[in-house]
Length: 279
Ligand SMILES: [Zn+2]
Ligand SMILES: [Zn+2]
Image (cartoon, rainbow, N blue to C red; front, side, top):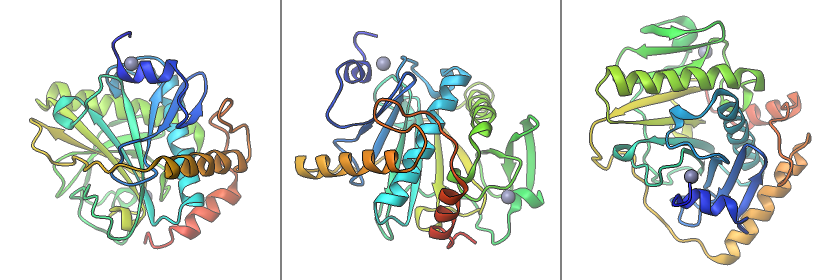
């Protein structure tokens, strides 16, 4: 799309490119709320997250997962947050679907809390206060008592996104799209905010990787992010550190060739250790 800002950035390779492959382009955000924040885009133009074809969404989620891992390995972070803005009322400014991955620090004041009741055990696996909306063999969309939105997750228990196997990403993405569509068509939502927090300091309340969906009627400023400029020097430093981390993670991950490679158990263990504050 000629007039799309993101399509323009994708076409002309930017110095702040972290990942670039057939399906996905990830750019270091030049006006982030937290330094090191990365915008992950499909190479093809789709206005909304819920319009991305299954295969490309799986690639997008695979890149998000890898970038989140790389952040956990590269920055001294306490967790990560994945934010999706579907529609203008959810704060989507550019009509090209994207997910934002944010490094999170203790007391960073980012304020993207999802009002899910905190639980020590896994409510979802115990099906406590959980009612399933729909799902398939591997994933489900559910409502949780005390939370006015929807959750989308794998049926199997994975504490954080990094632990979710790659082959689960396509069904997970498909269920996520259907859940967004359900909110837009049956819930009278004009937009949807999607949030996944990895780690308690990032705002994770349930020890199971869940995409939480919040229906938005108007842009009331909730979940909006303050912008902060980052110096050129910092940008260069972060870009090379992230690229290095992605390459160092093993598998075909490079700026030109990054694929959603299998995460080794070693990486998963490392991340789980790092985020062991999740109950
Ligand atoms: Zn576009
Ligand atoms: Zn669970």
